[in-house]
Image (cartoon, rainbow, N blue to C red; front, side):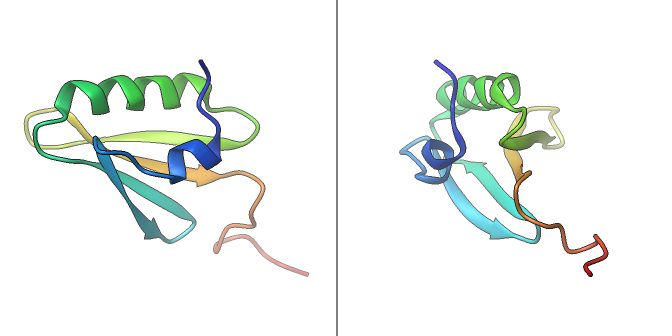
Length: 81
């Protein structure tokens, strides 16, 4: 099942959602490492026309955050007319 952006932004018991510049950060909740890892991997595979997903790792090289950048929205660094 592919994850669309709206589903990711809802959050879940496995992760929370923080607003970030040019996107959002999904952060893993304690005790949900395996489920967050599955969701993050699926989000990276589902990324494409709707959003870009960038896994972020901690000092143990574990994916504990995922940056989601919606592709339909203008980025803060892009020049606007």
